[in-house]
Length: 168
Ligand SMILES: NC(=O)c1ccc[n+]([C@@H]2O[C@H](COP(=O)([O-])OP(=O)(O)OC[C@H]3O[C@@H](n4cnc5c(N)ncnc54)[C@H](OP(=O)(O)O)[C@@H]3O)[C@@H](O)[C@H]2O)c1
Image (cartoon, rainbow, N blue to C red):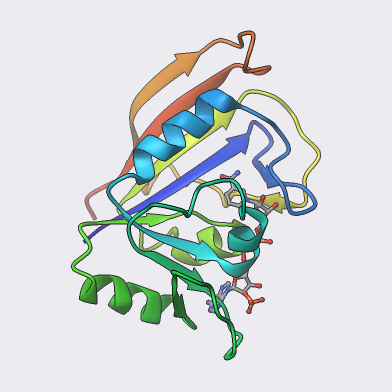
C-alpha cells in the first residue's frame, strides 16, 4: 500500500487558519482532486468537518475519518480511533493508494510512515494556526517540481512538488 501525504502549505509552512484554508486557489483544488481520485482517503475529524460541502469526500472511494470519539458517526465513511487502526482498515479495503489529507495533527503523526509527499507550495506568507511539519532533506528527496505563476483565478504563484522517501 503506497502511502501519500497530500498537502498545500505557504512559504511560511501555514496549512490553515481558524479551521479553514487561508487561500482560495482553484488551480490547487483541481490538482488535489486528481491526486485523490484513485485513493482511500484519511482525514482528521477536524479537517473532515471543515471540508463538508467542498465536494472532497463525496463520490470518492473509501474515506476513513480519524477521531478519538467513540460515538462519532460520519455517513458514508469509516471511522478509525488510532493511526494503526486506519492503516489496517485501509489494508482490509485492498487499498493501493492511501491518501493522507491532514490536517496538521494527522500530518505530524503520519509523515514518518509516508512513502511520498505531494506538496503544493503557495508562494506567500500567511497568518496561520496550523503548520506542516518540517520536511527533512536527509529523509525526503525532491523528485519533481512544477511551477505556476499567479493568474486571474489564482492570486499567488504556486508549485506542485513531489518528494520520495530516500532509501535508508
Ligand atoms: N493546507 C492543507 O493542505 C490542509 C489540509 C487539511 C487541513 N488543513 C487545515 O488544517 C486545519 C485542521 O487541522 P488540525 O490539526 O486542527 O486538525 P486535524 O488534523 O484535521 O484533526 C484533528 C483531529 O483528528 C483526530 N485525531 C488526530 N490524531 C488522532 C489519533 N492518533 N487517533 C485518533 N484521532 C486522532 C482528533 O479528533 P477528535 O477531536 O474527534 O478526537 C483530532 O482532534 C484546518 O485549518 C484545515 O483547513 C489544511
